[in-house]
Length: 393
Image (cartoon, rainbow, N blue to C red; front, side, top):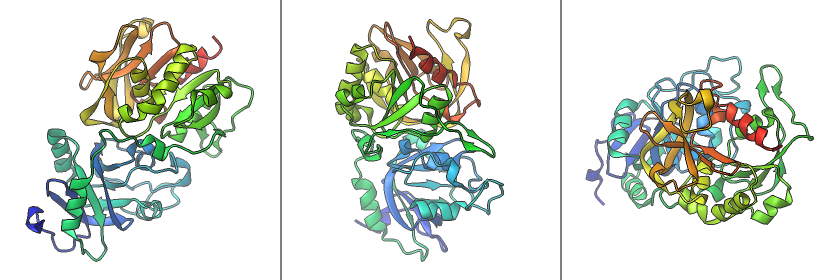
């Protein structure tokens, strides 16, 4: 493989590179961890919350381009980590991160990325990269950081080209916790940290397909007691916990691949009319269990400013209301494949894609966005209250 395929050539002083599978190289200043990682490049439009984004397991197998130019200004801290499992591989930024200026910061972004094993690349024209993704779709690529500026470009390009991509890939079993555990901790409050959860509450069993911890905190805030179980937990083991309701978490990868072991469990829960609430991947798996299909999106939805409208019956005066939501997904339920008995409840006002379903005659619903991420900032908390309110029915 000739290195002439890689353009443009490395400029003087470049210590980092994002090398796309077509040979396009985006050079910059490396930061965070050293080495290389291969995955799909996506972009996120959020202006804040970069630490939460980088620790969201839904980003496993992905390299995140931040469209907001100033990333790292508020540093990082141990309270804002969403999960300690595999998550984003690295990030691409416009400006080199500066020293943090925030009273909650305990560490700068560069050091935090290094400690977390995540590669950073700064000094990149992120607007041009975002336009490339919007026009051509999310590409496969390698992100690499070498302080001495020495890269084996031919090997990196081959690595990018040989990576199979996210379609057909089951990542949930890689990021899910391995043991059953009782969740502790509710909402965070300044000066107090996370509250404790009580024991005498409706019991929710949360199936972890790559969950963000703040989802469990919001379930506690809404009035539930939570037990978290691994992605591949059997129906019998879920039922052994005697749940009042079951939550299906977010997670990475292709829902059609994860469905092989998740859908039979969900269908068994539906047959027993156990209340179900799914978010993101959990929403997609609920759709598959109900007979719909999912598909990979051209560029995906990732950001904290996505408008979603409530549609269909059952919302009363709230029908037509628009929520500002937080999203992170590259797959979606195909609204055109919803079978009889499955109602579309939410749609994206960006492109009309499905963002919510409810199953007629069952206490089961899901949304394609992240209500726990405080979009709006409280536009979507009603979903947790809706679900917990079903548990005593």
